[in-house]
Image 1 (tube, one colour):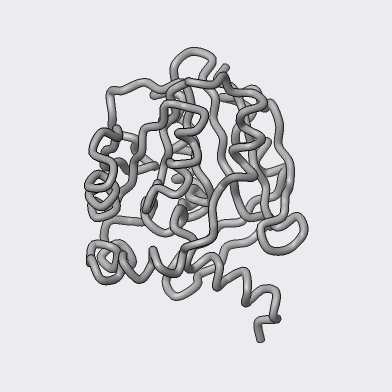
Image 2 (tube, rainbow, N blue to C red; image 1 turned 90 degrees about the horizontal axis):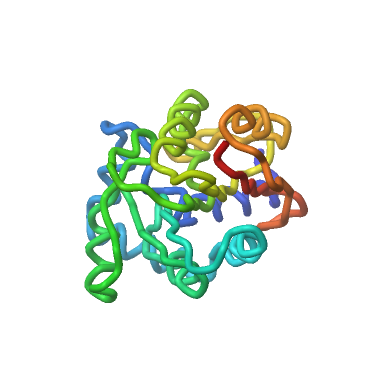
Length: 217
């Protein structure tokens, strides 16, 4: 039986925009779900009230204002709007519906469809940001993504990513969630990045989340 706190966290996970759109295998039923307009509408309604303000508040301590930053898994653009207060953000998502919806309201915003594993783009960025997005990759896919992030970052580029804390994998209504300890994240990123800061924070329960900010070697 799922206890109340865990159930509450799983409910939050199931509606958190950033983590539900970008990083599934091409044949995943979930990906088909968010190619339907009515499902996207419902998701946006349920996701109201969640954003990455805590993470962005840490990022601005280390990342120069006005820099270009690619957001992975932008969804309806909640964090993209926050990033615009400090940076020159570029939004990306695997779902064209989310991209099209945001573009209609913000026609001058730089947006494009992108998969966070392969990062198939020739563009370069000063920073890469994601909020509870990379947790949907398998551990091998995350390693692939880290290598590609190096490729698309400019020299001394910065990354800022958040994850759920733990040492397990879960499947909730067909959705994959991979949890990481601080030690595991250090091991994954240390060969390619100089870690600036990595720390736990509270999303729902104390120390249930962790953010990592690191610089390209």
